[in-house]
Length: 164
Image 1 (cartoon, rainbow, N blue to C red):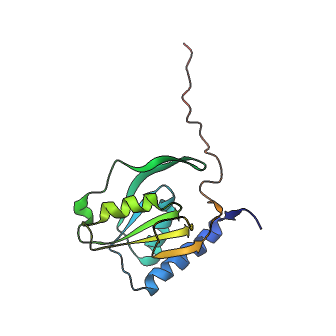
Image 2: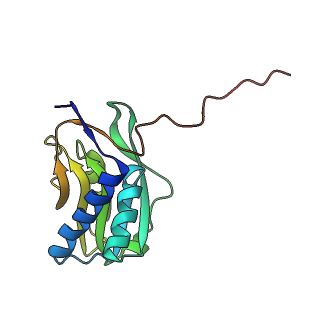
Image 3: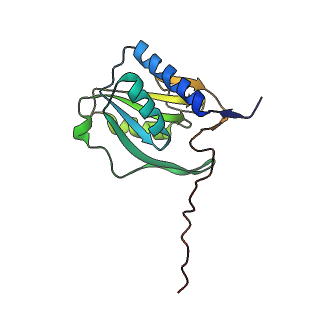
């Protein structure tokens, strides 16, 4: 048995569809899906199509800075969704993984008092997450290789010194 979960693009298709089926079976009809960028963008898009929800919002949260390296606490980055856009809505928060749960907690707390209801959907949830998501495709304690982040970037973002 590998020490890693391997999620392929094909398996992600299955996972996102089964996650959507859980949500539909629970009779939860979100007014909007709030994606946690970056990994949650893929999940939110797939759920948006499967649940026929066109109203998708993005919240940029920085927490992980590298493999198993993170900030002390997650930080919201601009642009932050407008409270007016969320007011009274049934919100489905979508992310790829609930690892510690800190990012999901930040987003849930941001929604508290602004929305009618907020629920969370993730592809994976780890046992150490202090947020227990309503919708989880798979629970694991292993490192996860996501198809969108397993390969290195195709660009080098290190600033280059241009010689005159």
